[in-house]
Picture (cartoon, rainbow, N blue to C red):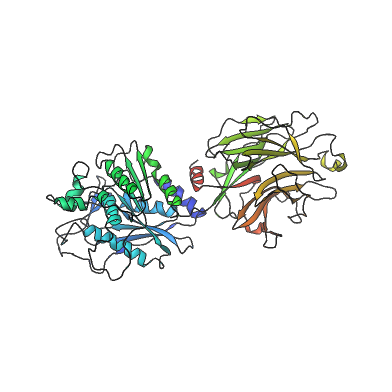
Length: 601
């Protein structure tokens, strides 16, 4: 049952089990009908498997009793979307594993419940009218799933259908012939799918474009012109045809790509929402795909489902951090809920530091910019006058690391620590800011207890990370300040910062605000953290509440506070869990695809 890309499936299940909590609850298949309409009893006609040379099942022939095999997601939701999957096989066999069960598991990984339909294959031996037999099964499958939507925690308005090859013909028939009264239904539940996904589908029965095996199996050798036209589904499209996602390979020599093209054009003409992906290679029957350009179709399908609001993508959180002294570089952890964090790549480095006096990668701050890239800055040394910078499309492949000399103009600058980036949507600029001690400045707050360190926050702006504005002072709160992190919250910019004062001891986190990213910022608030030393704040909204993570560096563990309804702060450190040894990091939201790809590293 896991013949296609088993390693990928296992990785997806591990990730989604932890992050989306929607692993499949696979149940045994159950009969579709109490009494099969139009059935002819035939004791000699029995279902049989199709086996390969090693005795492994590759399909099912001679289906007598149609069934549904449910794969229900388990995520505590009561309104999950669902899809009925019609495997292909030329209406002569069902590739129920490759184009059924494996596909259902993939749907579960993105939060969609799935039902694999083992439909009757057209046969005069067991059907009064073999042409409508498969469609009877598809219509009843849609009605049955919709009828039991509440029982299975489904949204009755999000019941779709998917078909592969000849199963694509059945799915497109269900999408265009849903008003055909081909059996007596006991209720008025609609048989119209809410959306359809057709993968290298047979659509037409017309000569020169159809798949002859499918045509002959369904319509017989001597089908009339009217019957051929009726089941050439590109001719049956109208404004009520459901939104459709199409996939085909140009080099498909079994089912010509024109099947999908003509159906797409018919949808377009009728103003039906449609998306089509034609791949250079892949041939026919590639299922989830193993190599070639066509392997991207599931990513495109998921994006289409999100764009059409069939699935609502849940936020996934990524945490960038360092360990030890930052010698080995960038570490990453992920979380689905913002509370329980799991390291990636067995907590080893994703990027080794290469620039700066000490070649460290401390305090890695990552944001996703207006250009769609991830931009990262970090502390390269305890005593250098610049910071490190690199960018990436996927958090895996990074640009050449650069050293940005933001404080070399200051002779008395002792350091550049804990740099961060914030993007200004209005000006389309990035502001990079950090903490520096400049000898001889702000003497009124200098303390021998801190080895002469007396930081203030400085900044520069850039549009392209090539040209930078002149470094300026960003924040002078009247005390030794470090580790600032700025986020846009409503109409204000909120700066989370560390009061580094040791005499009298502070070592806590505070807040300042401004109407502009570049300030001026207000006086610092009262502490939002408790009776412990905290540094490295990073904030994000979790369940609608602003949550600030920080390094309880004397306790060698991570902590968090969360804003309450009255604007106060509640310590929730006992509710979070981070990988051991996590140091000063940044939290961001990312697409689940980013996490999936990081899992493969």
